[in-house]
Length: 209
Ligand code: ADP
Ligand code: AMP
Image (cartoon, rainbow, N blue to C red; front, top):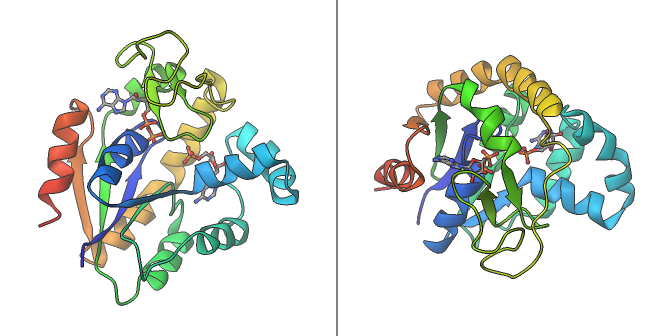
């Protein structure tokens, strides 16, 4: 059985980009951000409740997110990459509980936060968030169009400079107890996420043996 992966890192640190590569080696990607955005796109009751919270760059309540996460997990048949969950100590404890009896590592994407505004404001994605580009460092072949699916690329409404700054503040206020939790459990590894995507991928996969 392979280890489940919990990706920890600031918004824009590259978790989604690495997840797309890891999916090719058999992992199943679960992103709480993508799940929430999909509820918003469907205009479901849950989507209506959380839309403003995402737009402001704040965290959705633990109860809402864990319900959505659990509804999308099938631990018997999949090896998961958890992306965007946990976001605080309580969520860390919850996920550790969900993964009881399963092997996992938590991978911290370490980098200088000063580079992230530039990275995120240049991010463009498919509507489902799965195909990720960067106007400066990884542009699509045809402007505004996904190389893989041919759909139009979008900019997330919370990827503006002002909201990214708010999301960074939230990240800085919450990350330390999460890292401490997984360090104490003996599950934490760090990767240098400022390297090129290929190098980051190599560092992550080194920890999977
Ligand atoms: P996250 O999922 O952590 O929010 P993403 O994977 O969406 O981050 O990456 C944010 C932006 O940075 C995207 O535009 C992506 O193309 C770009 N990016 C991701 N990894 C790297 C990297 N190692 N070096 C440079 N740019 C990167
Ligand atoms: P992300 O796609 O991970 O950048 O998340 C986008 C937004 O979704 C965040 O700014 C939060 O509003 C919300 N969100 C995603 N995951 C969580 C979570 N685990 N707990 C609370 N809010 C979340």
